[in-house]
Length: 317
Ligand SMILES: *[C@@H]1O[C@H](CO)[C@@H](O)[C@H](O)[C@H]1NC(C)=O
Ligand SMILES: *[C@@H]1O[C@H](CO)[C@@H](O)[C@H](O)[C@H]1NC(C)=O
Figure 1 (cartoon, rainbow, N blue to C red):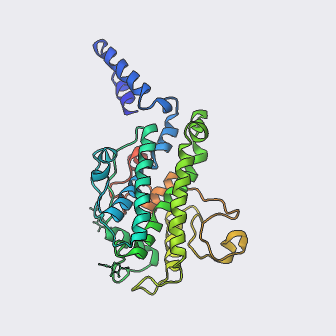
Figure 2 (figure 1 turned 135 degrees about the vertical axis):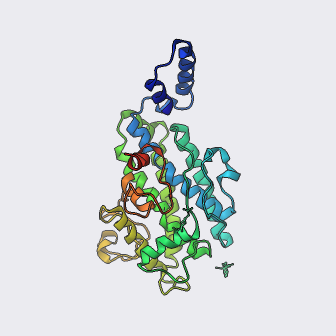
Figure 3 (figure 1 turned 90 degrees about the horizontal axis):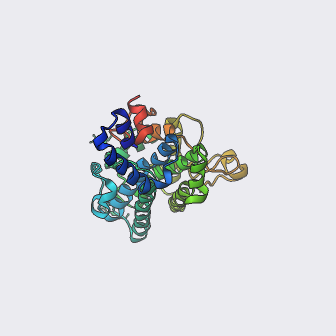
């Protein structure tokens, strides 16, 4: 879309008109064929999730395989800066296998979105142990000693995976009804079901992570005096606080009035009073992933903020 803005700002001379027309024709007839009639707000909503898909792709790729998009699918990184501090986690064969599958799924998701919207290159991501340690300290309410290391073992890595993919999931639920034009609904339900299809697999990933953690919910996260269940509650509470729009996030154990039909304290999947998935706006998501509670104040996993029209709109109003 930048191409169009560029041309409209300074009208092309007659000698370049033909070239411009050709470029626009090629542009429309190939890369954005299916979104050519989408209002800009819909395009923006469809590209926004790239921010989280890049995070997940890099975190899962490095965690399981010790290398990221630059090695495995450099075209998709589109020359964005490499992530800070990402590395291979100390995982058992089972968890490594599961996370490898998630990693390759995220590559597919990036490709699927970029087939429909122009998107943007990989934003700068801070995936250092310290970056996750800071989130855990904020969740627990005091500095953990020793600092939480997401890469140390299966349990720590799975807890760290609890931190972000769920936020992406609520973003897809939130984006869904906001898509405005009849054409984007066609994308959604008819043409290739992009958002619904991404939501399907993202919620599957969340369910796998939650189930693996649920099995160990009463286990202490060594060397802390905090159980897995308590960690998830604290992370969820932190996200509710940062998102600043009420309760949209629940740990693996909840007070009975928050359980399914107010009948269970186990909460292997999160949902509202009708067990329907919570949705979040891009604004809430940015507040959470920046760790600042402010969509205008980047930080945390995104030291320079997210990319795309929505995130940039808050950074440079
Ligand atoms: C990454 O995050 C950690 C923890 O917040 C911070 O100390 C470090 O400076 C960050 N690195 C960059 C390059 O932003
Ligand atoms: C890797 O994880 C295993 C199992 O959780 C643990 O026993 C081992 O100490 C870890 N190794 C390192 C280097 O942290």
